[in-house]
Image (tube, rainbow, N blue to C red; front, side, top):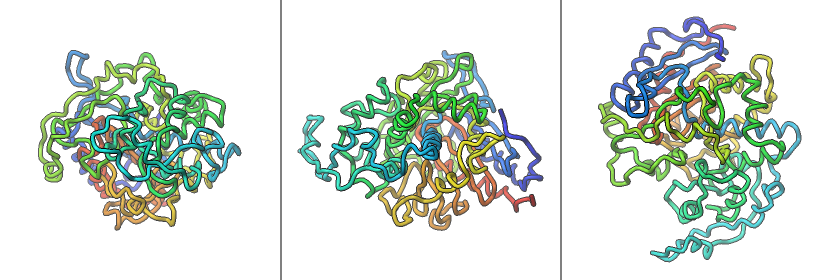
Length: 462
């Protein structure tokens, strides 16, 4: 299903300036940044622009060449997180929990989770549990709000920055990608030390996977059943799920990585790379940030997960609320429009408007931004002037963030360089899909913002 369509002019979109956006998208392919991509703009509930360029699948032993189209399916990865947050808040409205409830009320194992004291284990030790000699008790219990805002003290195994990250790797705490049921993996996660005391830092983490497990506990349903029955079917998101449905296998795009540069950890020791089974890049490669800034051509991206053989064609054992979904651009546009409408789309109300407004407010302590909470850079983007709500980032100050946008705009992206945002002030939503891992490879998202906003004129009168 698609949103209604209208002419760009009727939605306050300048057709001549939209040609700049088309040219930018085509450049991404011509310069070998991506193999293929698509972008959709909707305003006041109607689609005013769609463009696709390049290939979803390249010619190879895995099948015939296929263009990137409106029907292309992609690995959404971390764009799953806002969906999980919506599911949780639907249950919040039904009275299943309060935000200041301790996590341990629902998953008791987290009552005993210890906190890393900041000291490193002895150099050269191979003991996977060596960090457990450097832990202290929690000063206060982890709360549900801290899980939803990534301030619970959790982390990701791929961060490669602390002994806690290493503990995750050594103990197979991989979200997504593990061949372990969600309930079991979350119980094991509770034995890992926290990176910091709950509520003291913002750290991108497996918290949304924990939240997905909470959705299962509160609802009594598996995460895939809840998503399908309570979100996807009501919204007409028939292409979205934890795996590509039978008969649609040819629609899943290939996943690529840059031939050089863009390595994990190249920006702020962190990337939005929660791709699970994707192989890590050579840490010895030199970053191509300078070439990217100059718009120079690159070597063609490398194929790392052919769509024809991807694990996303099979039903996963682990239902990852942090990064497990696949979907299409029109499906995600419907989800984004539901948020922009205040929780309703086509007569189907998932959330009250006041609840969506609450989710889109900054929930970080003292109304601080993510940079002040310890995460100055994420993916290719500075997080000065960017707060965090319940499920996505929130624009606090475009000047401080040094990028175009509106105060109160909400956004998030995934490891394969996908991205979306909703801008209530402009009644605008944007969805961008591609399949380039990791998302820190090039400043695509910042450039996309400029290309979109330069074409958005004054809002047409209602």
